[in-house]
Image (cartoon, rainbow, N blue to C red; front, top):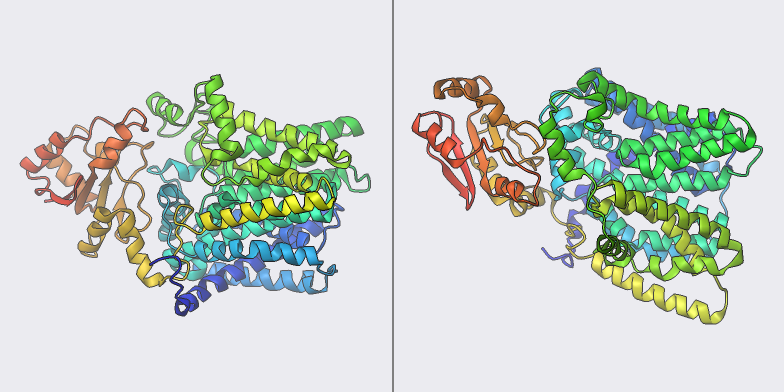
Length: 618
């Protein structure tokens, strides 16, 4: 189906997804409002800013609640439905958000909403489509699916990524519990992830308005929401979209309260600590973009006020969010930041060889002038999903005397995030995306550097060209699955077939009681059968089970584990074994499987694809 083939008769299929997401979002707003009121940080946000801040704080609270309930083995749909219903009703009744003071919508605000509305509509509809990205299928959704099926959150020794902070992924799990189904619940979680984008834009607009003018705020929001990267983060369940939200919230809170002497400093920095913890609960790398910079600023505030309250408040807020995730890892692996810092803390099932494999894949890359220039150009505009509006407008913020100081601070922060990304990570493009909120604020300030008629005409032309181009590009399959109104029942079966026809055919042809051991393949979320699998950074399951056992022992072990079939993806194995790949054990070879066939452990292989074989356990 082409993206232009609108099938509006399928839109009612989305109503249960929107309804479940609405319940979760209302509960988040209620909890967030309670947290913000209790903190009494004195920020005096406007109506939309209160909603945006409450949403983020509430999702952090919901994530922690899901973690605790999951560890206690209380993953039951009725627990979540009742709990969310009570939180939503109590939050709405207490906040009475309909009574909050609202300013009259200006003409410029209405125009900005009209400009971004196509992006938001595509984003919301796209978020309710089946997942297509490898990382999402491997762990962002697969981890919550396993927790849902197991009825508890426990250590998954076959999927190392699930030991990382799963604050965002808990929304998928909550969606699964509310829906009572992992597939429909996953779509609920994806929709909630997409909601972080407009919430971030509200806070970005608020920050730029505070530093510049309401016009700068509107322009900053337009720049952010029309960025193809932001659309992509809305339709693919990466954690960088929520991470960008927390970066925007940190910046908004800092600008609001840095010079507010009436705000209790411990509570103000406690709120920033909560937000920094929320960022790190999305992704470990947020320690560089969120925790360290705001932690340093808390120390600066402590020094200038000669009081330890700012630092203590920040550390306490961060600890409230991150301590449960780190305690979980200590219990499961002995390492609070597993699998990182293995040389310091050690960790379950981690070895020097596995550490070397991980470092080779995720460690810093070579440093050279050529690599640096390539990265600068990539971030500035060559990246496939970057918007030219950042480069066009952000430098202009230095031209206006009123915004020059803010531009200097924002520019310094952007340089810091870029430097840490380039020096300390493996330079995956998604890892520099936390720059976008601050860059959007700076672009909004720069776009409003002059009020002259000539500049407004030039700015309008640049915006028209860039926004139109970004919209056209975001609407294509290059930015994400774009069958926005497709039949979900059809797409549920068709999308996996398009992604991996051999694996989908295997899942379709085997009897319901079959259990598949997958070798070399970890993008398994769409599978309906019970499976055994592992990521490339975990011990290979077939090697762990078979080891050096004789054939009869291998057969017995497979039978004891309930394995009826073994699926081997030789293409994926070769991809990992390529010099640019992540590496793969030498244990898995065609000769070894041929020997098991000859010994009667496995039946003769059935070719499910050009380089994929299916073996039946005899």
